[in-house]
Length: 342
Length: 198
Image (cartoon, each protein chain N blue to C red):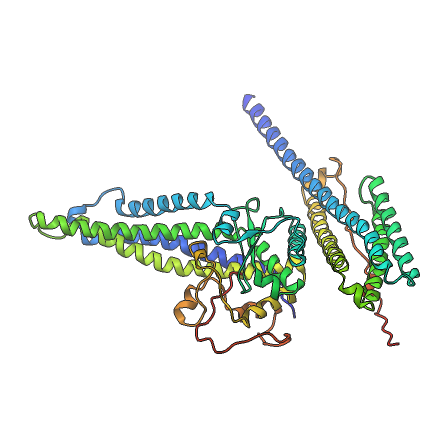
């Protein structure tokens, strides 16, 4: 009945590898197609050089922007991210019983995972949400909302924290940041294309008309197309990878706690939740919150799988909305709440 | 002649590197096992330290449940003794682990009894001190369980590394031997719960 978490983990890892391979293939294919396009459309001016300049240009720009961005991300440890969304460090000697419990649970899971105990932050928000940030287990930090403490029981809170530890253990932040850095690289390529396009159309006025196409214009156009196509499909792949990492973290949570009901019931409570007040300042950081899976497009770019599917995967059976104590529910909201970053 | 010498030398170097790799891996794994054991040890000791506090906290309310309180104290002392035994024998051995597991599950049974009895005293249940103790005890309980899980995982990896070919040829010569898993006979699970409505 319950999930076989080893199998689920293997499956999620395999899919991650596949999607990342496709991502890499997409990058190479875009650079090769750009080179071919240049040779076909500007054969006269471009000639037939031994070295594929356009493809190399595309790859160089993408990877150097990505590398620069990634190094930038690395500067920010988990605590920096937590503090920049306004979360506050929990006092290690707190007398507040709920905070005491939170710290205890974090220590428990740290033992279960053999990871160092990370600093724990609380974000004063009413909704149930949590996230792990940091670039390595040594500088990771875990943040939970006040809503987590108020609304979840001990087992559910343990499930949520085990899920976040799963992200730390599986190095999901690093994977996410690398992919995000590459996406930024694609964006910059198309941005350079647009700027080139602008400047070359200006300079063309001064130029005497040349017969045939302007090679700079063509390079610019190719950069715009290649950059935005890879940016678009790269973003979809990024979301696909992110969703697999969520399944992996859920399966890891079950592995650590051996208690599927903890995390499953926490997700159920989120499903029935009607508040959403996570600060918007968190948005630049990773894929914390994206819009709910209402339309085709938002499903395509969603960083988290639908809650129902996650619960079904954890419980190893199709989703049923049962077995829950009454929980405040409001159907009047027209805007669906954003998904949790749990 | 010199080519033969070079071939022999290369083979000797490769062999040395291979042996070094196995040696280092086994040492690393053994240290992980030892570290995982000390995690368990720390948490067990913490639990034994918490028991007197628990007894102190409930004594005022359930003074006439003297038998239960004495039972938990003696179970605690036995578990402490079993833990010290393991410590003195320089790490877990098969028999000392078994003793510890038995003593520890007896202690858990006794604590569960007290907690169940405490339900009958609303004032006690509501006291802040008791709630804190309850949280600390259940957290320590979880830590022991998770530490045991981690210990057993590490032991499994270490044992597998010793049994794998080609490490199996040299493992025991390098002073490595198979380590016992820490399995707890859970009396609570094996025994059907007794329910009485009186």
